[in-house]
Every structure is written in C-alpha cells, then in structure tokens.
Image 1: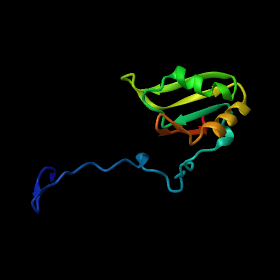
Image 2: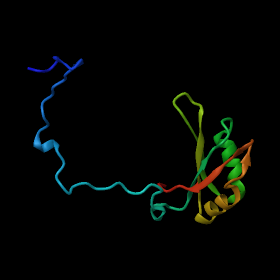
Image 3: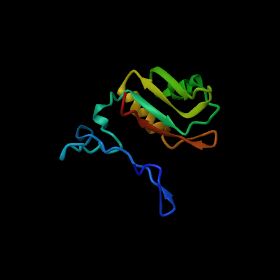
Image 4: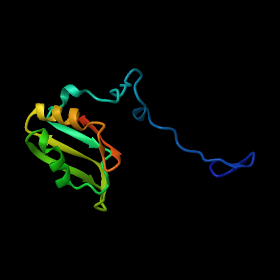
Length: 123
C-alpha cells in the first residue's frame, strides 16, 4: 500500500517482516575466536613468508630456505592471473628446521623488501 509512495521528499520502500525462524535465539550469539589464532593446532612444520618480492619464484624460495633444513615443499602463492601475491609457504621435514627458518629469515631484507617469516597456524 505504501511501497513506492513519496513521503517528505523520499520514496518509501516497504518490505515484509522476517519470520521468527530467521531471528537468532536470545543467548545464541557465539563470539568469533580472537585473531592471531591458536598456534597449538599448528603442525610446527610449515612457515608463511610474507612481503616477498614480486619476482621471486617458488624454486628461488626453496633455494633460499634450503640451508635451514630438509624441505618438503615451497610455494609462492599466485593469483588467477599467474602473478605473485607476495607471500608463500615453506614446509619442512622437521619442526627444528621451521624454527631455524624463522630465526634466520624473519625481518631479513630480500631485494629491498623486509620479509616476515612466521609459523603457519593452519598447517
């Protein structure tokens, strides 16, 4: 009846009210887990390397981290267009090698970019 009518210089839009089933039950709100995650769920074998130079390849990432210990895989993440997203992951055979990579490469400058190396919380 009032949908589309003009009131005080504005067009009214009238919609049907939501059903009771669409409303949340009182007290059912569950807060989201805090950001930063729970590193206790991490395998301790994989690190995330952020702020990589755009030109760095997966092979070069592998070669850079080889001195830290045996590597299972190293990958620079690329977008749909094939260009680097500026971060990657390196998975080691041992947790000690991953810790060594963090100690050795975190906050190190690579091609005029200061990289960040952290334990991957989800792998």
